[in-house]
Length: 329
Image 1: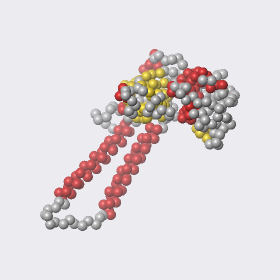
Image 2: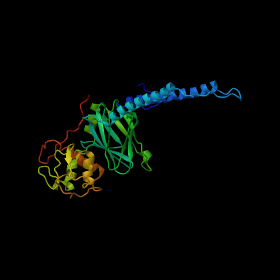
Image 3: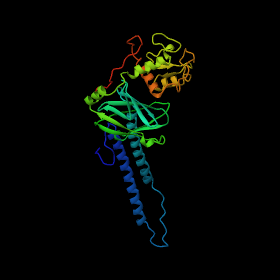
Image 4: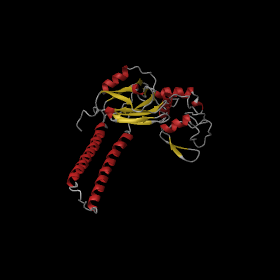
């Protein structure tokens, strides 16, 4: 798709696909607008009333004409449906291996957390040519991440995790906007996505002011500070189920149903633990709603994720590699 001045520069793998669909829709709309307008003008002159006493010719319909203006629009609509569905599912399904970044929107700023502990405000550094997945939530009201150059946009909701992924194709600095009116200073809730070459990105990682603590380690500390470890033990079963190997596996509940232990389930289990009680355990866990910040919840989730594999030390924590940059495809 040729680059035009009508749209921002394409800077992700998804941008050309979105633009192609957009221009197809524009072409279809323009074609039928001109066709219908032209036919209206043509018939207005051709069948105009030439005298006051002239009577119109009775029209009895045409099955072929009606079939034509029914079948052609159906075919066009089905093409648009299939095309847009393909793009939607590509956007909704991130690749298996991604560079994970956690995002918290709040009035009126964007906070980014990298699993290796780096935190950024209103600016996100990513390497070019790498699949990046954003796990997003809001601390207060509904926000919306919008990156025009990537042709991506997704809601950021309080009390829920949403996701977005992209692969940047060009180094540069690209605008990040909030596309949902979120309060008085909504227009000031802007940021930047800085796309760097791999070597430059790794140099930034080495030279940036990281906290020296990974998200999983921060989550483990918070887990202990909140006394969660007194019930959820990593070596034996306590008053609560063990969290080792929990993430991304099915959990049987006390009502006999099963649920996948994903981000949404774990968040609900922390903020509303009696909503889905694990089979064999009593609903004695208190709610931590309001006691843990959104950043803290994400850190605890990252800690639980780190327990997916065989524990490598006494605490059961498997330290994540840093930085976790997927291999270039």
